[in-house]
Length: 203
Image (spheres, rainbow, N blue to C red):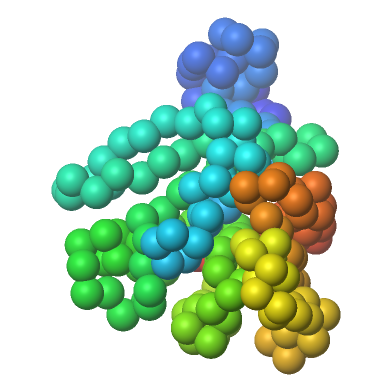
């Protein structure tokens, strides 16, 4: 049977056709509705707390192939898109020193990611933003997530997200994972990117 998506006849019926009564490959519309988004950042910036807030704490943990480094994955539904969220090991730079940083770099630069959420500590932007620039220079689609803004406010620090967004040329979202603040805005930013760039993974 010719479905118009193959150059020749469809493959013999497989699991997909037995389940859905269609050709043995999933329709392109289904494939385009799945996305992969990675969370990256230094240790102790609240990255895993944000991951749990986005995925409602349900996740699977596995070792990255060939290593003992754990990588956590969970799911986020945005509109009619199924987004796989990947919580990567903590890293300070795209120039790895540890095995964990090497795994994160490999995930960022060789995986078919549609978006990266760079989670930073809003109290220490001077130490965190150099990695943001590395991601931008590597042409990795990035949203900067300035977490711990409540702690920054208590220290009298003013976080000007709009100014930073204008200077970097990428979306910036402020959050407090411990207080569950800014999560809706972050999901909205993810949704905007997914729907606007649904055919543009990093590789």
